[in-house]
Length: 96
Image 1 (cartoon, one colour):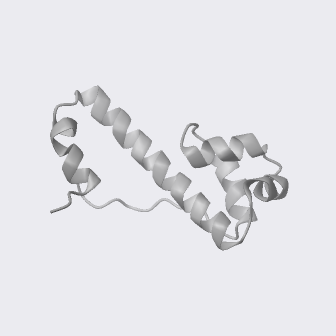
Image 2: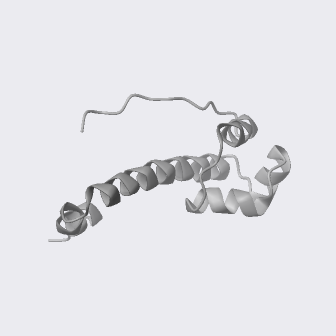
């Protein structure tokens, strides 16, 4: 039977320190935003360069946001959302 990534890494994640677990949660939230941006950009048939042109944000910064290697500001997210016809929202999380 094939394991999911979550199943395969569950034992390792359980051994992480509280600090490492907190950092992982921050990364996972940022990565979720990155995935949404990529999906919307591709849905609109845009390249990173085209999105950069529409937003006035450097293409390299768009790439870093999509890779999850930077944390965009609220204003940057608003500019990207506007260019993609989307809204920036806070959505209540499911209980942990």
